[in-house]
Structures are given as C-alpha cells and as structure tokens.
Length: 125
Length: 120
Image (tube, rainbow over all chains, first blue to last red; front, side, top):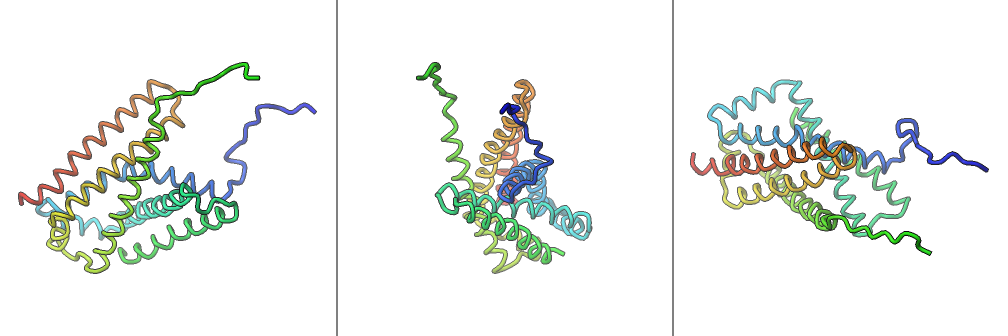
C-alpha cells in the first residue's frame, strides 16, 4: 500500500486534546505576558510607587471598565501560565505523566486558572 | 549499520537554559505566594500602604529578585518561541536582540522604580 508521505496535519482542523490546548495557551500567555505584560506591570508599579499624582491616576484607570477588562484578561494570562507552569514542574519530576493523570491535571489547570481569575476579578470589580 | 554517524553537538546551552527556566519559575512562585499572603493579610488600600509594602528592605530585594527572574525566564521563553516560528535568520536575530535589549532596559527600570522609593 502506497501511503502519501510526509503527512501534514492541519492543526486548525484536528481537534486538539486538552493537554495540547493547555500547552499552547501556556505559550501564548507567556508571549503576551512578555509583551505588553512586562512594560505594563512596570508602568503600573512606577505609577503607584513613585509619581506624585500616580496613585490617584491609577485609581481613575481602575474606574474605567475597559481597563478592568484588560486587567482581568492579563490576570488570567498570568494565572493560567502560573498553574500550567506548576503542572510542567510536576511533570519534570515525573509526577502525573500517565495519560489519564495528564488529562485530569489539564482539566484542573484550566479550571484553576479561570476560577482564580474570577475570584480575584470579583475583588477588583 | 550506521551509514551516517551523526554527532549532534549544538551550543550546549539547552540544559543550562532548561534548568534556569525552572529555577526562575520556582523563585517567581515563591514570591507570588508571599505577595498574595501580604495582600490577603492586609490589602493595600491607599498610596501609603502600597509604599509601606515595597519600602521594606527585604521586600524590595525580593521584588527585584522576582523581576530579574521574570526577565531571565522571559528571555528563555521568547528565544524558544522565536526559534520555533521565525525561520529567517536575519529577522529572528533582530527580534532576539530586541528582546535582550528590552529586558536589559526593564532590569535598569526595575531597579530605578524600587530604589527611587528610598530617595523620596
């Protein structure tokens, strides 16, 4: 039987297993945390700590719903990256490497990231 | 029978970077939990309470350690991403240099932010 090789999978067409979704979200959130995440974090810290009217300005930003949405989104990027990162550290130590466990911990990571975001988000709003 | 004996040497930074990425991750986890604990015990509600948290000498050092870990961690991650997706050497090199320069800039900026508190 003649098979066509190499075979290219269309990543957009096949259904990704949950661990793959967690992985790509980890990478995507990492890139967004680098930019614009880091400069925004430093701007915020500088504003709060060092500029005379900075804190009041920060509070007026916080009053803006659009800003709150952006902050909540970045909070999720961070928390997802954080939870998925802990999962990878565990995998490096050979915990949770079996297929069933890998699927279960993927679900936990995705849920934990979202739940923590909602909890902290509720506090911000 | 090996017709081609291929020796893959590479630049040998793989293991070191892999380890650095994980060590910086652990440093950031510890700091994040510490900060979360501080925020839960006494949430900063005004400018003075924010300044009080970060003007503590240990907290300032820990914050700087966190930020430097973050920048190092980000370099390894961004380099891996660029190596995976940007195949044109010239563009990749340019982007990598931009990442490095921005991270050096962020390091200096972080020190300024944290230690400017002392001057004020």
